[in-house]
Length: 184
Ligand SMILES: C[S@@+](CC[C@H](N)C(=O)[O-])C[C@H]1O[C@@H](n2cnc3c(N)ncnc32)[C@H](O)[C@@H]1O
Image 1 (cartoon, protein in one colour):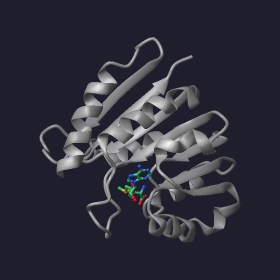
Image 2 (cartoon, protein in one colour):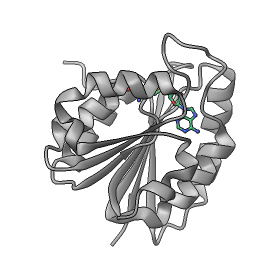
Image 3 (cartoon, protein in one colour):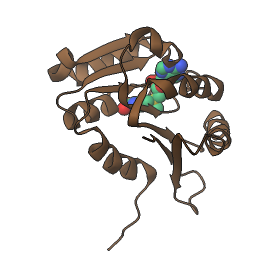
Image 4 (cartoon, protein in one colour):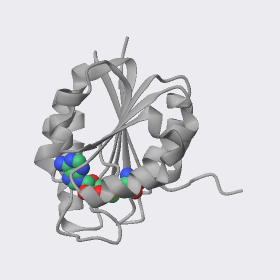
């Protein structure tokens, strides 16, 4: 039996468990809405904030998550402004980096913005809250994000955060997952 899966599948297994009793979740890059829907399906009592800078992405997410719309705040703004909207502590903040599948590859997440957002999000997390990041080293900005995140997470204070990476090692362009837990 094959035991190893790619980072996206491992991420979903972890997220399922991490969000099931959550009351506040943030999808920092909602894109086509699949991740927001995944959160809504697995955290029935949570309020979810879904961010994207593209109007098209917000519309797609609204459509995909229609049955949960009362529990979701759709925000067309950069995740860097998260604290303007999210006023209570979060159980999880998730990032699925890169560009909107099927749209312009020019509009993508950027390492500097993502790192500044993670810095700001650290005190928005509950104890035992998590930050989950999927990075895609297969395209230029994705590779840059991956390297900067590796560096950044290595330097996180181990008394406050535990940071872990998962990537299929011999698949050069495979997606990579970073999972950060805030300790009690
Ligand atoms: C890989 S897609 C996300 C996939 C999505 N979670 C899904 O389930 O379809 C990355 C998204 O990040 C968005 N994005 C880029 N920079 C952003 C920023 N600063 N703040 C919020 N969203 C951003 C892009 O517009 C794009 O839709």
